[in-house]
Image (cartoon, rainbow, N blue to C red; front, side, top):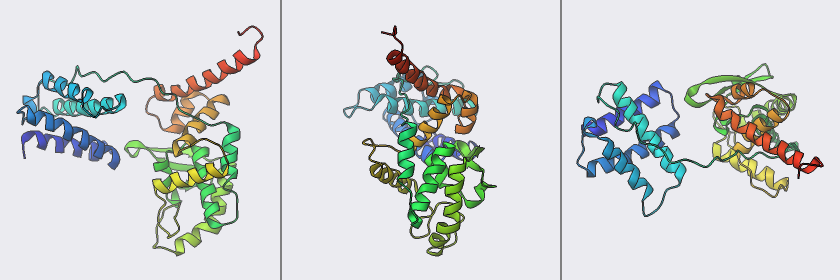
Length: 301
């Protein structure tokens, strides 16, 4: 094992253990840095201190000129992984200068989050009505996603004990960061019905697990299962558009801001580390207001 690959392993342990990043994120870093070290090895570099700014620039050029072109967001993510690795090398004293400090990512077009309307959301939630145990579970999951703005990974990772006193839920976000989010009355009622009438039936089919949401065999519902549940509800609601678990998070934030919530409150509820991330949603609501103004005001056009 070269000194370079040893340094990469140290960095991956650092982001996994000390920074508490998710397994999926660490695996993405591993793939990105694997491609980076392949380029460095072809250039004859085997130690961190042997990397120059020209080597980083050569890797960036390779990414942009591949035969199978990458999207701008993929290039930006891979260069972000490289920059993080080099900052780690400098912080740990493994190099004396940051070779990636000038590696600028490509400018990404601003992509506004896609939310559905309040009426469309009501239709999706109504599509899970029913007395069957699966319907009760699906309603509890979807009501919770919309009530809390939880990421789907956060929702399926919930244990029964994370629902506190019925009206708040404890979510664990990126970096295992904990936040407490209120749960509205509709979600409370759906979760209560599921816990009393449906979850015990699912639980009896499998081994004991503290998971809140259980599948048909008594196991924890996976992210893929949650996606399928949402897609099926959208089809029954006849929305005519595809929605994903993140649609619930986007709609949660957009509807709160449309209702007058403060952006910093929404930031806390979403678990965003920076208010700048949350402010993207204010642009969505501003676009909606602009459309309404243009349509309604006699001198707008």
